Image (tube, rainbow, N blue to C red; front, side):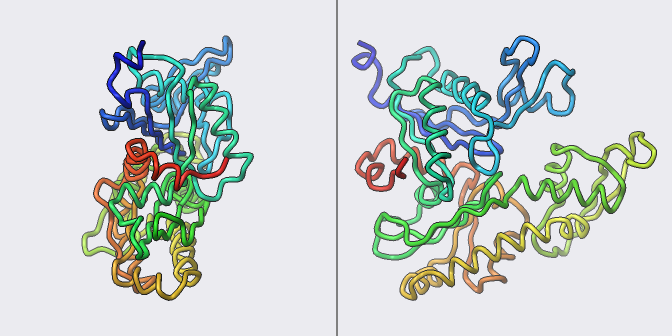
Amino acid sequence: MLSKILPFGARDLAIDLGTANTIVFAAGRGIVVDEPSIVAINTANEKTEAVGHDARAMLGRTPASITTIRPMRDGVIADFDAAERMLTSFIRKAQGPYTFRRTRVVIGIPSGTTQVERRAVIDSAYRAKAGQVHLVEEGIAAAIGAGLPVTEARGSMVVDIGGGTTDIAVVALGGMVYDRSVRVAGHHMDEAIIQYMRRRHGLLIGERTAEQVKIEIGSATESVEQLNMEVRGRCLREGRPRVVQIKDTEVREALAEPLKVICGSVREALDGIPPEIAADIFDNGIVVTGGGALLRGIDERLRTETGVPVAVADDPLTSVVRGVGRMLEDLPLLKRVAAAA
């Protein structure tokens, strides 16, 4: 009955199940959920207190009876129970009043995930009341979402810098020529800032503060404009609140190691592809997607490191989910690129 009443595709959802954020795309409606991948659970009664934005607001501020959990770590499920609660909440929110079991769900996953990790994603989606579950590697999804000609007889390269992983993909003729997932990305940059502030200034800061520092004054290359920021935290020596003024040069120093790993991985990818594909990429350039694409100067840094033209995708945060969403409307393409479970 519902399948006759509801518009075609109303049951279909595309999900970018990210370490930092989960984005849900509904067929015919576009992006309907874009929230942090965080769950707050009351340990006294095992109830879900909050999910997404509401749970993120609780980070570092919860009483002993409430725990905030990031179900995803390095692009894969680290806490199955919390992942199921989060997916259930987001799927219900995406469906609105039309909640029923036969929902087709396509989920983007890092290319380096094992069969066990892929099975965990599928099982969590089924427990969250999905009817059909398909997996797609984030690299090719990002390429499709960025508008690259993935089905043509020429190579395209995308570097998707997410929260937990950096996915590097080279695609041609609808298939992967090269794919690699490096477990160094946005959250590792945040952790590098936390450790730098602890080591250099004796200041303990939380992950929300570190992320804000990265967003406001973080960069991958030197800039003409000098940026400064006040950072608030707890003094490790005196145990009281303290404010420290830091410069963009310090943040760049903190980010040096994770950026070195990412740039090195991109160079390795270029070294490992056929010469004809390499020539295509030299002509067409590299496209950067994901939250890490918003770091100042990341395109210039990659251009300097590789000698290849580099561009940041339009709306890089949603490239993966828009690519997965395209597959909801193109089932032959989905069958062609779906990852084996």
